[in-house]
Length: 546
Image (tube, rainbow, N blue to C red; front, side):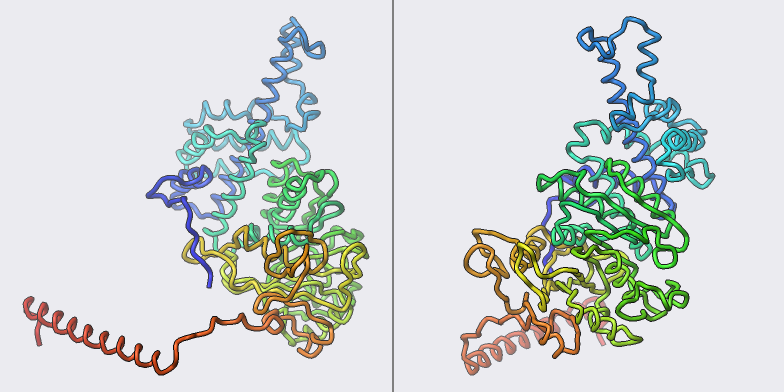
């Protein structure tokens, strides 16, 4: 059973909430009757503009100080015109990896006019100006602020809210203030939008688990249904956290929904992540924008059970090496698309509906069997329900390895690791659950112990005695041979393999237990009768007796 989160954060009636939550509470109060799907672009666009403006202002201050410092020979000048030219030299900003922000789009300019009736038009003009002078942002930023249905008071209020938060200066970047705000707001909008929110948001804890399992330290990372870019962001964070170099990974993505594509480009731009992100109306199946790409890592959360994916036009596609996917469900089209894009030693980790592990309908069982017999399934993880805003159904994680012979790792050819994580997680509100850092560590350590890539002085679940030794844990994990999987009809549900968790023995003899329970029941009957008599007495006093 999932635990309930014990946190110091309080709701709108309390204090001690994180600054991200405080910002959200303030911004959400201004939403009024505006639909969350539209308000999302209003708010996130302003966050982006504040970020680029803060970074620009800091670089502007650096250049201004340098032009006044005689020791800085590259910039110092007593000529005011030359000084002004330096401060407004676009290349001085681009060379420092700072977006050029034209005068009309700078935050202090907009803040001075925040309460004017024309603020919506001014914001639209600012977005257009930033796009004009930064080609990589062309067609990405929202230009919706001048619409009549968007309250000018709301816009002014939002500008005031964000004015007091540093987002793009070096100190804020070092603390990842912007990333925290952006991710928090994305999550809140996903919750507000319900099912539609799943188009751009994957639960952060699930992304963290996928990344920690695959460890994308170096190479090409691909997500052909990349949403708002969470897989890329967490990959970069993982590399940074483990002392790697950001330049050692390159990201490739594709997104069919243009609105979500824009969110992704902004999400990557504010973090300084360079990526090849493509958009087209047809999507990855009908118009694969990276058809020649072979990736070292594929990470994805594709649409579950998608029936409108164009399968009727792709019967003879070369990607269907393990069987033609059914027209009414894209699950195994996605699986084969991922496999197709892997290098000979590549690995994939992705989210799918639980039905993918056991369904035998419309050729799905045959495809799954062929993938298993090709020895591609490395690990299967059953997750708890309520992790996603878009669906309450439980989901699973698939991990595909093109090469299991291991190299420096343990040879796991002909084997698959099964992990049942359904009892992990902690409720964060009445309807949603998250995996805790300890939950993620437990699963990740188990997998890497099994693969032989873990060296730890402290054995945990899934580890035996000795450094990094793996052992099966009843009810949680088991490494199964191909023969055993065949015996289960090529079904990949972890519960079939890990068994039931042992229950504590009941030391109380049956006769004594029945005597105790009977006595407790008699006591409850007596108390029930007393309460009934008391209630009838009170009703009679009120004139409602029968």
